[in-house]
Image (cartoon, rainbow, N blue to C red; front, side, top):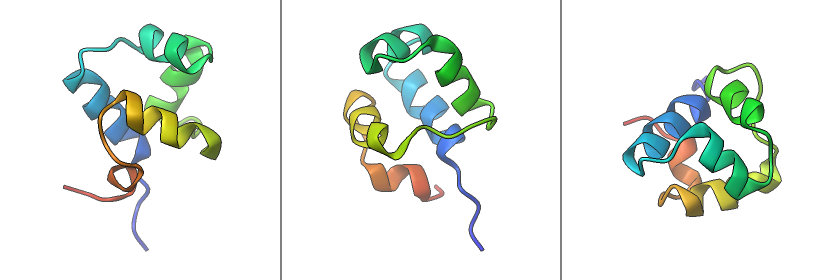
Length: 68
């Protein structure tokens, strides 16, 4: 079974876009602690946020589920 790598991908693409956790959180309308938890694998973003996250980070939703 493949490992879900959403947290690693959010970090990778957020840093490529030079966006802070706080900035991403503000753009999504969530608290910055939520983004921090996503990146630490303590929780996953709600599925309804995936299209917005992908758009803001200039990637596709598929990128969150595939390894390099």
